[in-house]
Length: 359
Image 1 (cartoon, rainbow, N blue to C red):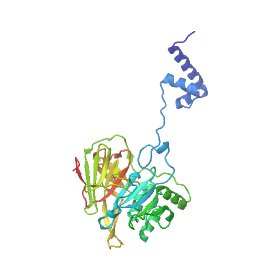
Image 2: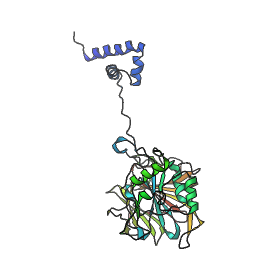
Image 3: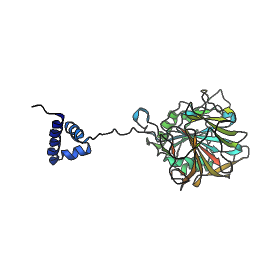
Image 4: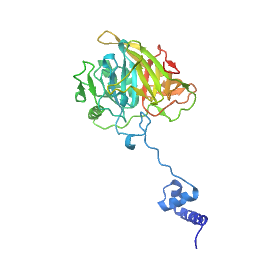
């Protein structure tokens, strides 16, 4: 006798039901029955079993390389942004970059790596008290920097960061004879991860995510083609301009593109602006300029730029041990586009200027 498809399904269904008394039916419901029974059950019930989503990098939201998140902590490297330090190296390889105000109208970068690698990063310069306040939310990251005053070193230690500075981890750094000191100190991510593991005497795992990510932009957003952040008209007159062709924001100082040593322009998928309260500490640099302090707890106005659009909201952080959250005016989480992000710690005294089209 030849069974019709309807007959086959009836027999199969009967088989599944009959076996349910010994627990196979329950296994089939959970998707864990033996393969022939599972296929029969799925055919009868129309059940499908989707594959688990691939792992994503915690600091970019993009698919992890080779399907696996690297088992290593976040690595932060202080990179100089004085005119003498340009062009820099390795910034476009970082997962996240923070730009912080320092003394004398200058800014400095904290380039953070986890999934990304770079075989050269620099010029590396000294740490500031803002650094541990930013980085403590990444659990126990490694911090590479040239040096720091005693209060800064103490703050780094109190925050529990892995201190891989130029003095204590000298093997991880090199000097470029072709550049003038002190703008000639360089490192690699591989060397600093190795140095950090030696200091920790273990191989720590990845950090928590700092942002929420979504492929599609949800909710209201204003079209923006240009962002102007005038940290300093002399040294850090920052512009970000949206490139629809590249699908990224491109950075300039004034009208001059901010290029790196490989000739590429500094670029980011997202630009996040946090307006922060800035004060002055008792620490001074060699020129007698006081080092700024940045308040990164509480709340403040925030601007998220992604996909050529702007979402205005605010940032919130109850304590330094908490991860900063970004929410809309109505309290909904602002999602970034998967990719690299620059976070601009802009003093509240400076306005964020935008234009619909690049000027």
